[in-house]
Image (cartoon, rainbow, N blue to C red; front, top):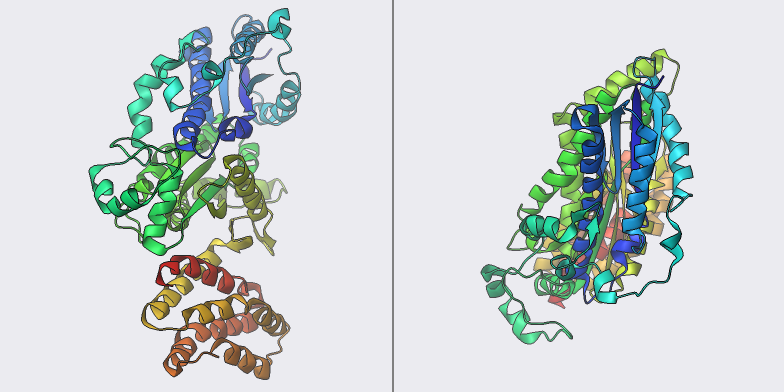
Length: 520
């Protein structure tokens, strides 16, 4: 007899639902739609606690459009869950998303009972998602009057909608949480109106009202902020996702460890990542929060849009903070404990938890649906990274996949280039030559991996980089730029496994080019 039930809720259609809006309305719509996904999952969680009584229900995970609950065996469990699914189907039948409930029974006292239930849930959940609206009544196919204003979900419509989900008023819940939601957005304030007064006066952005205090800053103005600082009116689009999350949950033999990981992820993506936004920006005179719009952050992933220079800084901060919280909360030790058990059982060990990212740069008017798609593709490229024992744990930027260590090298190289450009001329020539240097450097590095250093070719690369008009510039290029190529080749020769990605040089040059367009 089953003593427990593992219950899963899974929302599908999230990407299309959130990003199906225009660039013009994005600042009023995207966060509202991501909030709606989170809200229906939380309402479901409360309903499950009410149906089965909270003392019989343990939350394992709830975030990112998914939730898991462990429910003690109660009378008519399956019947009650089927009834709940029917109610969910009825309330969501005119929306563009679907929430599927799946459940697997197990005996907690049986060895590996929880783990086996977790493994079985994968198949069960996939099957349930293929049976959308299976229990819906006949009126599902009855024609209905589509009303665009009532069906649309935005910051404005949520404040006055009559929509209910599981008998809970969406309007009431939203209005209770509205202030907290607004505080996480980049909003106009008196300081910003003063700093960017010239932009507001001189920029005529079609279809936009004049900025008002406490109103969200539009994507157009976020790009204008970047232009004010750098000369490039560009947005940065960032999507990040925890690597191999399912592998960790699959490795847990009990719900205690699974719950610990869930709580850690919730702490990071629901709280600490927003604390990072309150930190200063090395590129701007104000906090990151004033330059970055969080579309969603929860579960094991996040999506941000903002002034491109601030997004670059933020991606690096998120990766560093994520690694820090894993150590601080004891998850590194937990993985080590799991690996000891796996070794005894003759199984392969699992890697420590890491995070990967896709970062793209687009114009302010770039279609929302398209930039969401391209950011997802960039993240997928980062997830495919594999070199030796190193897999994933990477960032895709400007179409190139770099490890986070290589991304730090890009940051250091960018700083050197900025200092050079601040003081000297010929900087466009310098940047173009660095962007074109990747092929030559890669050929040299391949020779170094084989233990063969070609000094004539090294000198030719040096001549290519320093071939500028100003003699003083040549000396600076030798000292501050070419030495980085030399150091990378020496490292590759002495330890081929630590070979430098040749694309760090053109990526740094491309980033610097954007940052210095104002100097043209």
